[in-house]
Image (cartoon, rainbow, N blue to C red; front, side, top):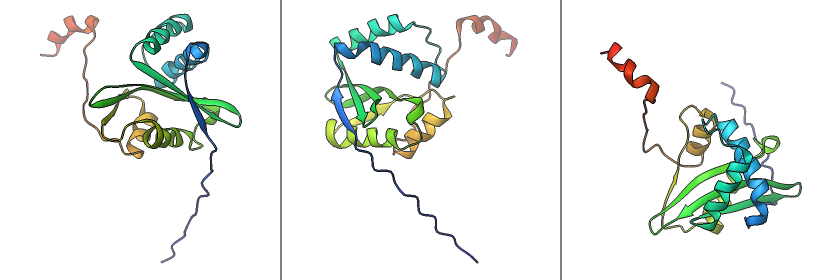
Length: 162
C-alpha cells in the first residue's frame, strides 16, 4: 500500500485591522451589497439603503472591523456583543481574495484579539449557501437551529397538500 504525503504550504498573511467609522460607509455598503448577492439572500436594498442601514447599526450596537493586507482592504466583519453573546451578523471577503485563507485568518483575529473568550459566539447562515455552511463548520462552529418558513403567497396552497 502506497501512502502519499501531501504538504500544503500555508500562506502567511500579514493582516492588520481597524474598526470601521462613518468614513467607511461607502465601502461597507458596497461590500454588503456584494455579500447579499453572493449568499443568495432575498434582500433587495440598494447600496444607498444599505449605507443608511449600516450607519444606523454603527451608531447603535454594532461594530465593524475592516481587515487589510498589503493589497489594501480585503474583508470586513460586522458584529454586536452583549453580556452573554457575540453575534456575527456579516463576514465578507472580497471575491478575488477568497480561497486564500483570509476568512480563516479573519476569524482567528476576531477570536484571539478582538472578542471576549468567555461568551457564546453565533453566526447565521442561509441553508442554501453551502460554501458558507462548510466554512463555518470548518472553523469550529456547530449547527444549533434551523429556521423554517412559509412565504405568504404559499399559505393558501398548503391545503392542497393535506
